[in-house]
Image (cartoon, rainbow, N blue to C red; front, side, top):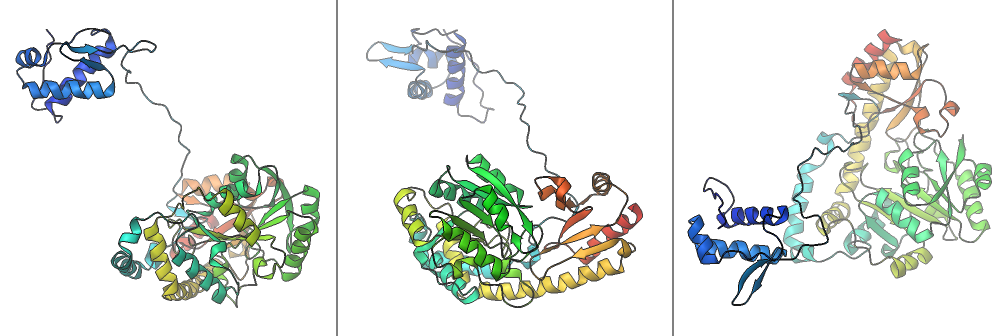
Amino acid sequence: MLTYTLSSDDSRPLYEQLCGFLRRDILSGRLPSGARLPSKRSLSGNLGVSSITVESAYNRLIDEGYVRSEPKRGYYVSELSGRDCRPPEATAVSIRLPEVYDAPLDLSGNRTPAARFPFSVWAHLMRETINEHGEALLHPSPCGGVRQLREAIAAHLRSFRGMSVDPDQIIVGAGTEYLYGLLIQLLGKDRVYCLEDPGYRKIAQIYASNGACCRWAAMDDLGISIAGLEAAGADVVHISPTHHFPTGITMPVSRRYELLSWASALPGRTIIEDDYDSEFRLTGRPIPSLQSIDTDGCVIYMNTFSKTLASTIRISYMILPPVLANRYYSQLSFYSCTVSSFEQYCLARFLSGGWFEKHLNRMRLFYARLRRELLQVIADSPCADRLTVLERDSGLHFLLQIRTALSDTLLLERLRERGISLVPLSAYYRNAQDAPDHTFILNYSSLSAADLARALRFLSDLI
């Protein structure tokens, strides 16, 4: 007779304990295939439990396939041949996670300051969304995104960027990284994708991981080189003309028309316009987007709310030319929208109610004031004569050149020892030797004047 010790001190019900013992003995071979199990009455009497407990354990094992029931004959261990039936042994798992260094003072990070997020407005809109759209929040979102949000985005772009966009051209997704993957499927992996050098490293990683062929074209003072683009033999070019990362270059309209001429010269050529940081031009209105002056349907426009609201709000969108929008809906509409309906309705209200425009105005004033403070901190620092700021009138970062005899590697190591993180411009070049010497990226989106002053005091001692 089978004998097990069932404990009332165990958090599991008695039938689950019994089920575990029986499963273990079946897997170990103590109860071989075809063996008859004790009747419910005899096993319950032997273990001192109710027959319902035994019956529940047997039924669970039947559902899992370890036991079979034969009418008027009893319960038998199922045939488990064809596999190793030994129970898995507990072993130490060795998984190498990517190293993440969260520096106490990150001079190159791009986080949004929590104090600047409109929590009270957002909470109010969340309550309104639940009250007004309650049942609709449980319905699947259309593949391109909730209609109200796409209409609100179109209206915002019309007033802020002078762009005339049909809401059906807009595709909403959880982050631009996800949308890049959709674009590769839409345009084809057999195309040649050209990227800016220097440029944002993750873009190349996303394209390569999706099997796309990537090539690079160098930047000049006006943006991506047209000669380099031609030499790359590209079909698709990915650019950030409004505020290039990391150089900060704003592409003038003359180069923009050169790019449009390149795209229209051959059928199928496409420009992906990543409107990075366009909302944070500190003087005057942003230069018109490429999409707004494109007459041949060659430009795909992309933007995100991660920079304007918070990096953890993963809501981005792309605007497809009509031909590509029709292709998307005919070929890729089986994809579900990756942003929850609840967040989409909230953001739609935030945009259409005028709160987004007010938020942007406050943030522009805040960042303009912060930028002036930080530039003054640099001018007043003990090592001011060793520092040169290379800045533009837009975006949330500038370049800082440091005149020092130390190598960049040694300088960064010494800073890291003090909990200070700084990223060199060379990290964004395919060939680090092409980068200007001792040039670093200073992102001030979440940086305070006091923290920068502290970092510069240590830097002064170091150099």
